[in-house]
Amino acid sequence: MKAGIRARGIVAVIGALTMVLSLSACGAQKEVPDVSGKSFSDAAATLSKAGFTYDAKDRTGGIAFDGTVTGQDPKGGTRTDDMKVKLTVKSSLDETREKGEQKQKGRAEKKAQQQNMPAPSAEKSTSGGLTQAYAQLACKQRGRREFPYGFKPHFLTDAVEPMWSPDSVLLQFGATVKNEYNAKRDVTVNCNVRGSNDKPDVFGWTAQ
Image (cartoon, one colour):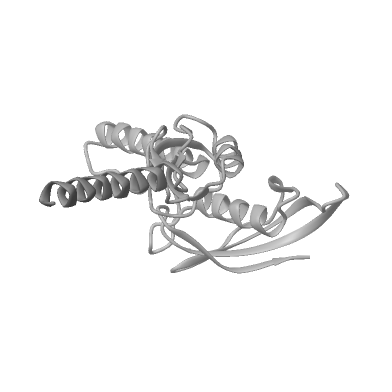
């Protein structure tokens, strides 16, 4: 009698384990595509096609809109039921920052060596350390969000002298924009930027 009860108990346990394994095998887990090293646009398309969403940040923690993916979490090949992938992106703004920092550092070091004294700031900037080059990049990023079908600023050929205040700079320049029908038109942009080179903040924007 006891042997029969024990046998039925073992069968019940095996059945339960089989059911759990079957449910696990039929779960909603998916394999995360490996997008590390891809361009941001290719990575976004690959993840979307596979049914994943993404959260892309650059090295400062800001939202990335372009560049190259340098890391992802979860890693490619991982199976997960979390359909959101965190991407670390080296954006064009990051690359410009690095080049600008290296160039500015080189000029400063060279001048300091020549004069045997601490080098002054190489560029005009706000009290927060925001320079014109990074203000222009911030305005360009804002323009791409405002005009997703096409935004081309004319910083060199159609711009007036920046208007500096202690903590911000106002850039006025022309730009060519496109709509969803690929129709072009020229606008005049007023872009007011504050913050620092690491975290520029566009707090005033018009394009008419």
